Image 1 (cartoon, rainbow, N blue to C red):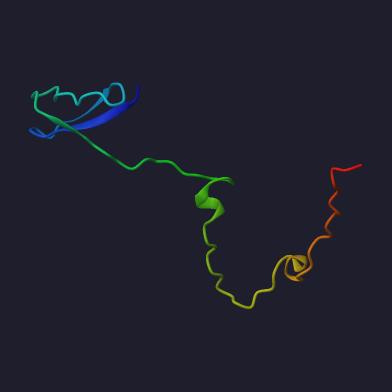
Image 2: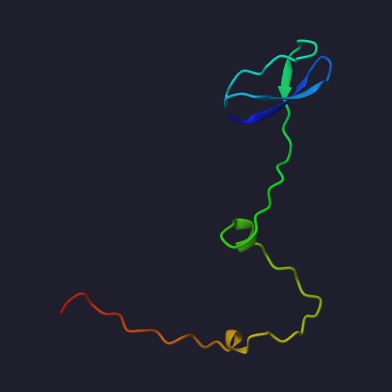
Length: 90
C-alpha cells in the first residue's frame, strides 16, 4: 500500500496516510476537516541506456564548430561488409 500526502482544507495541516490505491480521502487528524491529496514532483533520475531521456535527447551544440571527429571511420561513409543471406532451401 502506498503512502499518500494530504493537506487539510480547513486548518492547512499536512499529514501522510498509508491506504490502498483508490481509497477514500481521510479526514484531518487535528480538526476533522476535509483533506485533499498533495501532488509533488518525484525525485527520480533515469541514467544509462534504455530510457527515452538518455537515448533520444539531442546533444548539446559544441562551442567549436570546426572540431575534428574523434573516430575517422565513422565519417568516411564506408559501410561494414554485409554477409550474404542464405535461403532456407538445401
